[in-house]
Length: 406
Image 1: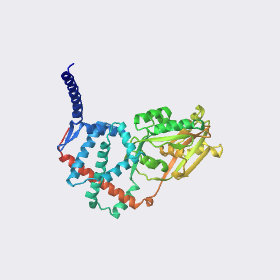
Image 2: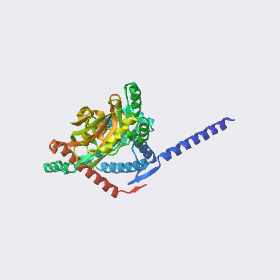
Image 3: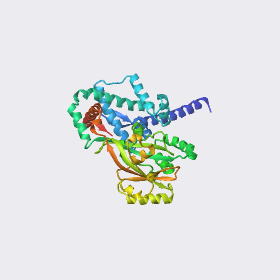
Image 4: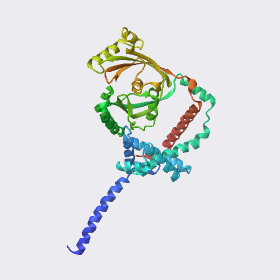
């Protein structure tokens, strides 16, 4: 091949490569949504979807990503009218704090993002809009909010009849960990604690959980956060959706919980001051005979007082009735009671190395009085709720007046 022909071939290959690259880049930069003449590209949409996947967000991720990006554009445009911006130092601190919630520094978290094909700038944009909008709303509407003593008194009084309280939607796994299997159980628990996928956690629950909920992939119904032991509540509230707690040691077992959702709910109850419960001990553990006897007891009782009749003419130690503060209840018993309503019972727990089955029944949750409520906390809660209302109304106005083209 002559020299001129070689160069022609090289140029042809180069043009083909550049053309292919340009087509790919152009595809990524294709506008998919326009918000008041500002575009959202295919690249931004793809990146936001991957970020939501990393966070374990349930539902239609494409729709969620589109909605979130549109709202981000609207917020950015409104804040730009007022000249709102964040300093590099402040933004870096927020990013470090965000990474810290996953027990990583920013460099480590950036590496995790890269492994999932997410650019750090995607997280930066996500965090920046959230932080600036929060401060913007406080600055713009803070002076319009005046929480009076009467507002606080009214809110405290209403808590006695229909308080707003946080409910959580969890999935659970409890791995049996008797001494001879403790090391193997810890290894499995460490692996599960790193999961962020709902499907993975559910598969693990079906495979290793010792509780009946394993049949549903460990899924629990909505429950008030106050139902859970105080030492567990903080761990749950720190979770992001899809995150799993660190392994929690309980007698002869290891517990893990995955957060599927949080919500505010109206519930005629307050945080329990004490819990009244009964434990009826059945010999044989989880043998067929022991489980049959537990089922017979379940059919015989409607309230805890009925257990006295069941235990009649038996040694006094077979029935233990207690009223104790939540923090004073053994962790495995407290976790079982969290799932029960008064009059309900379970027989998932054992004692004496599995030789004794516990028929556990919740008698009552005795609630703290309104006098225990911190007025300062109530003031902050009311203020936060009113700011959220202003923010939602402003965003709705911005959306209504915007020109949004898919």
